[in-house]
Structures are given as C-alpha cells and as structure tokens.
Length: 327
Length: 131
Ligand code: SF4
Ligand code: SF4
Image 1 (cartoon, helix red, strand yellow):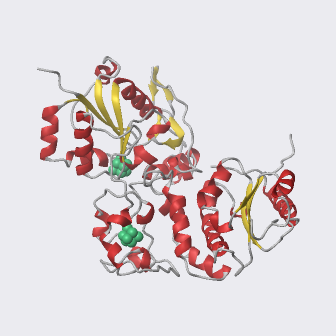
Image 2: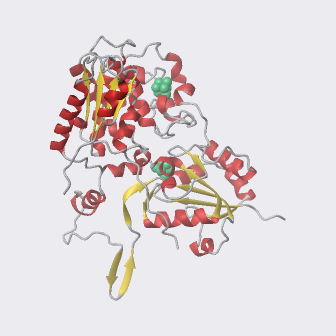
Image 3: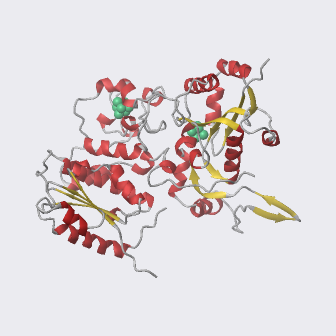
C-alpha cells in the first residue's frame, strides 16, 4: 500500500483557537486521520522534534501553521517545517496578517516587559527580574527563546504557499483546504483558500442597506440595541464588511455583532485598513471641519478597530525579519 | 551630524494648482511633487505609502470648498485626511505631518512656499520616530 501523505499541524504565536477549529471538523477529522499520517500536532498528540529533524526535506505533504512569529522558537519551528514540507498553509489571521497578537507592535518590547513583569497591579517583583535568553543557575545554563522586538506574519519569516484567513477559520474551509491540498487541486501559489467576494456581498443585512448611506456620528455596538436586520454601517456602527473577504459564514453578523475584519483584505488589495478608511470617509456626511473632527472623535479606538488583525502586515507596521535561525 | 532636511511629498490638484504653468518646468523645481487630476483621487494608501517610503510630511493641495471640478473630491479628501490623522499617531507619525490646504493658485507659485513652510514646521518636530 502506498504510504499515506504526512501532515504537520503546529501553532506558533497562537492561542490554540486555530487548533480547536481543526478539532471542530468533528467526523470529517476522523476521515482525514484515516487518509493521512499526522506526524506532528502538539495540541492533540505526543511528538518529538527530533523525528521531524530526521525527515527528508519535503517529506511532509502539508504543514498547517497557525500563529504569528514573536520569538526565536516560533521562527526555528517555522523554518524547520518549511524545509521538511512540500506545502505550507498559513492558517488563521495571526499567521496570515499578524492577528490580534500583532497589536503588540503598537508598544515596544520594553513596555510589554515592564507591564507584564513589573507594573501590572497583580505583579510582585521586588528584584525587577526579567526573563533572559540565558541564565546560569548552580552551574547549569538555562535558556529561553529570544523574545523579538516585533511580531511578524508567517510569510515575513518563511515562504508560504497558501493562506487560510479567519480568527479562527471556519471548519468547512479548513476541511476544503486539506482535501484540495491532498488532491493537488489548488489555485496559484500565494492564493487564499477562501471566497473572493467582500463580506458585504454575502451579508444578509445588505438587503436593508439604504441606497445612500449617510453617517453623522459613530456608536459602539454595546451602546445601542442594534436592529438584527439592519446594516451596521448605516446605523453608524463600524463594520469592516466592505473591506473584508467573505468566507466566515457571517458568524458575527448573525449574532448581531459587526465585522472586525479577521478574514483580511479581498484579493488584489494589500491591506484592508486604508481601503476601509477611504470608504468610511466617503460615508461621513458632515460639512464643517469642526463637525468632521467631532464625528471622527466619536470613533472609539479607531486604530485598534482597523488594525485588530493586521498591524504586522500593514503598510506602516510591516517589518522584514532576519531569517535563518534554524540549524 | 548632518542637518535634518525633512522630505515632503506634495500632491496637488491640477484644476486648482499650477495649471497656467508648464508642469515640467514647475516640476523640475519642486521635489516629490505629484500633480493629480483631483485631490479626491488621492487614496489613503497613497498617503500611507509616502510615509512608508520615508516622507517626513505629506502635503495635499486641493481646491477651495465648492470649487471641485468633479463635484466634491476636495471635500472627500478633507474628511479622509482627518481620519488618517487619527490613525498615524499609533505608528509614531505625528498628525501634523499630514496637512491639507484648500485654495487656488493657477501659477503654482505658492506650491514651493507651502512646501517650505511645512518643512520648517517639520524641522521643529525632527525626524519621524517610527514604532
Ligand atoms: S487566528 Fe485567532 S484563533 Fe487562530 S491563533 Fe490567532 S487568535 Fe487564535
Ligand atoms: S457593512 Fe456590515 S452589516 Fe452592512 S452589509 Fe456590510 S457586512 Fe453587512
């Protein structure tokens, strides 16, 4: 019998939500497990890195990597799995665009360390000690992976073949992606394995969108009792649907929560935040400068909203990583 | 240490600024000047990319209110500028580094003056401290 294709599933700077979404494949997962040989999946089974290191280059048919790259361990694992895999799939908003964890790029590493290990109200650290990459203890050398200055997307660190956006991606798209990869039925390299339309095109609330949308001030979703059928934007509630790829199954929209953009930009667009900013400004119907400023000031934390999933891949936020930690 | 010479990228509307002058002659004297069909044509990513490419400031010259050749492109960009200013600070770029002037200058004589004025203001701010 021919050998089954090998699959690796690994979370880098991830919350394990993406792994959980794979588990949510339910019965389909059993079929997948029959058809493939899962060589690495720390969340679900025992594993040895040395086994992966001993493999031939390209021996793994597919590596599904979730999470951003924030420390040296993430980078080494990403580089190792890249070398051993034919196809690397960046899974989830963190791997694709930096994700929620990428918001950390709005503060420096020093600020983060100061808060987490010194200033947070629940921390007692009288000697002010911070984690170090190397510590000598009774003659032993203890090491920790280096914490980088910056959060990177997966493709800033290794070559990525395909992208599967979402936070996390829905099980249906995960199942399709695995089946398509194993069958070799794939679009051009670099594509996202998700629909191409914008969310507004598939949103049920679009039917109630007024012909001419006019926003005078902004409100947050918890401040109003949102009509479950009305377009959020038309009601002055920020919804990233116009600039976000569809494919999520409108899960947020259906529970009366506006889109926050976890599927990233539509094809051909580098970044959704600037597109959304342009859209939003054209919908604002206020005349004088002071009125414009007042309306804009009524948006709470615009940066956090617009860049919630995309800071590390944004025009102003992206940086190039130093490569080649593995070996 | 070399003196700090701020770089300004200037977008200007062809219908309001310098249209009586030869674009090439004027362009030869103004660094990083980008005349466009309408200030409304300037999209958010053009402005962000200018900063990404190393601009210390971006100046947009549009027509006065009510004078847009294409209905209200100047007004659309005015709102866009206010929104972008709100976002720039998080990336370490002070909002003053993006400015818009709404006026008419057929000869385009004021373009270098306005750029010089912005450079002057930027010199006080110093180089961009990007995050
Ligand atoms: S994309 Fe979302 S679910 Fe996946 S690792 Fe990142 S935060 Fe978790
Ligand atoms: S803006 Fe939001 S609520 Fe309105 S149609 Fe688009 S996705 Fe739906």
